[in-house]
Length: 433
Image 1 (spheres, helix red, strand yellow):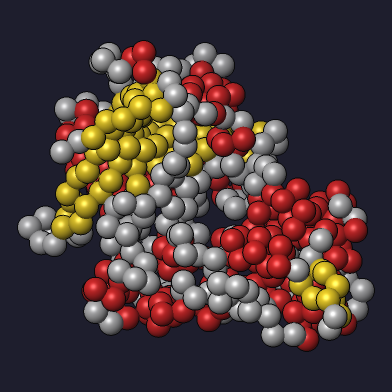
Image 2: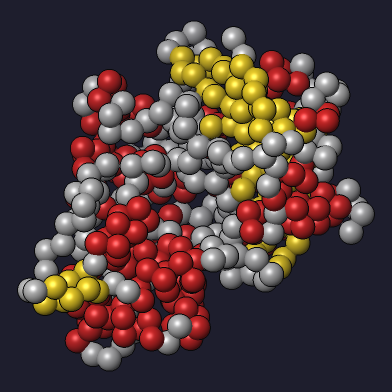
């Protein structure tokens, strides 16, 4: 049964689909996918082409927007849009600390989660496309990890695509996770340096907070253990359009005076736990490094190992001297599964995924070199989350791909730039720009 309802300027329809857990065994176990169909109110009865939106992540459900903001408003001028909760996210048979024990122990959970990478997501899309479009190919917009999925789509099932639009999500086709993080930490350092240049007082504020955490055991109201490494990980916001400002507002009033002396304020702790907790998107932590697994090499907690190659990120060493405390960025570490109550029961499952040696390739360079799908990609200059050099190398591999390289936006340009970004990309892919 489908249910439709209205918001300002749009008609929304809930769509549910049943797909195999393992597409190589279509007669086996199934899972449910959820997607929200969105159409402009004045076009609700028109026969429109479809645009499928693949959210960034991994592990995030599709946007829950109201009305027709940003890029969605632009898309609705000519498309009927499908916002897909990728498997394991949102309403699509969610995978988290509460549901995964239904699979059994950690080994069974890890085996289950191997089916939640880009290749399975693409095969989900192809499984539901006939039901949605009647078999016609659709335009797909992939943001960040959604762009990784779209690159896999171009490799596995290009016949399903009318047009491919990638924003901040052109992956390296062959980089191991170690290569990804060796490229990432210098970018993160540049973002932190730029933040302190904008907000000079934040350098001393960050050092003071870090020093407090090195000498105090701080547990946030939700049970999250706030270590200095966890505090540093708040730098993940520095890759977004407003992230530097959000971090500044967090830091500027971190301490409050009490009868026992200065301590971290309730307001700081409440805001920090909301930024740190993976309760809403645990799959991000569980399978993040596996999106780079494509051969027999384990990811083996890559970010944690590679971070050790960059001693300037060591908080204790920075505080022992006069160096600025460096925040970190988009990386997952084993200690997160000790600090975060939403992840704690899944630590052994995460260890087993990190040790796996049976990852299969996600991209087909030969097929990409012969691509005939119209495809365009926004590549953000010095993107903190996706290496620009890696993206441009991949762009040269995909036949016919046109790039728009810009420093006007950060990684979330499709959100902050909205209509302008999608306008530019659609014009570019249609040779109108």
